[in-house]
Image (cartoon, rainbow, N blue to C red):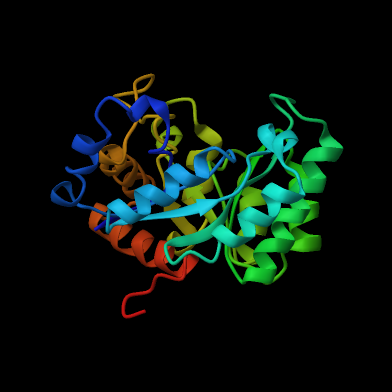
Length: 257
């Protein structure tokens, strides 16, 4: 079964047909989904989804573009939600210097605080990093040593990916890998071991070819698995099997647990 390690089914783009869409997942081979938190407002919606669907798990965290909304009260609530049975990670957290919606110092401050909370709770982290390669790496080295992590929607060099893999982290690969101009990501997939890759959609965003520009969903994951299989010259079945194993390890959801 295919494991989607990063989705946003709490997004309003799914309000029109969320129940119908999620009802198709298991019959279409999508075995598990982790719905990633990005705003404080998303947390309750995510918790509700994990309660309504057996295959749905969640994470709570605040995206770097939204850290201005965090305060000690909401941060305390994040810690409480992390104790819920089906909340399996802290995220998505990190740095985003592309949109620059929040000051870099504030982004770094709350990134570190959320990493420290994840360590306290012994939970993995989902890392968002855009146009912030050096600062993200520095903070991960300083504050996330020995933790489980995925570098979500990976967009940097193969060399940096290899460094993250050496640190024991996973590389999140989604629809972008199918784009013709995604040479750097294709090279990264080729160079790092399959044991360090997890599948993700980031839906409703970043739909793979041939649906680029349309609303994405976990049902499109086979296109991503197929592209990875072609790049690595292995079977699609092997990609699906190994990335599920990887995702279960990342989120502490190994079979039998």
